[in-house]
Length: 424
Image (tube, rainbow, N blue to C red; front, side, top):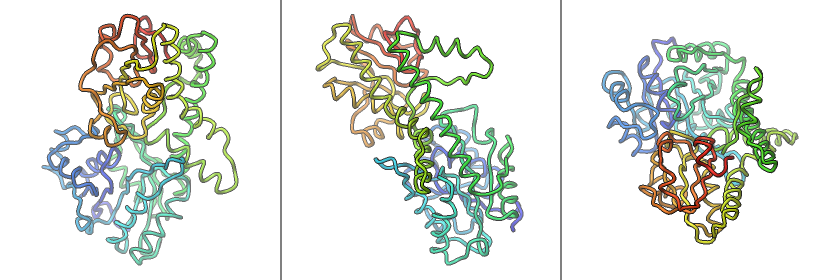
């Protein structure tokens, strides 16, 4: 097995997860970041990260002063011997896992794989994907034999997009390897850049399982408080006040109701559920939590319309402003956002909806969801829905944007309670 001084790293996939990791590896090792998107590579070479995960000045410094480069040319990763795959693992419209990006990335690495190389996967998967789905692709394309000619590891990503406090180096990293020796080597490589430390799992499957249950647990907890919000709303009780009171107990978990989207929490439980069903077990709690959380966008829109009716505001052809379309606050990521469910449900009532989001890319929203963001809000809206709690929305004069008896609905519990008609 190679020692650390001989390690040459290639990070495959330079999105929200791959780029921050590649940059940190670049400070310690000869590193190349690879992505099939040439436009992404071009912007990075200019020192610009549109995901906002790496500050531009920091990116420029690493590119200029360290053995780090980015490329869309597969030939540039041939000299590497430690491959880290950080591509997305989405679901299809039926919520079934889509492993195509993983398979394609494995084929790319398989074409350049050499004896003694190590391939580490970071993408969130169900237990068994690395060894049952990815390794056979590497063997087929490379002609090499697993655990004789090349080796593997799994170290799940824990990136929280938009979080400037819990960055990649400050989050403890779970590691694993296909043999005890490889596991130790993989762990040592990550220890070079992860200041928070590492946890060496006993097997690749354990590491895969640990990752997929992290977000499943959070999903279920949020589903519970979302259900509470529905119950207390019918009872005329302020959910936020209830959670604040309950939170005075030392072991009460501080979850809040809301929309659950994004590339992790809204997706990962389906990966675990898929595997469970394959082995003959029907997961009840996991899927119940997903169903409830997936329904919240539609629920918000319906409650908002009820508020309009109570204020005697005509629903048909009403003008509504929706604040925010990204999947979370202070982040440009629109992948699997549940705010879009509010938008679509409002449209089903023949409501005219303007969406304003200073963080989201207009081109990405148009491409992904088929509508144009407004450059700035208009006036005289019959209703305003705060869907995402961007800092820019905190000081907005909502009274100046809405009609005299317009409705203000706060999904996030972000606005002053006195200024809103209803909250989730």
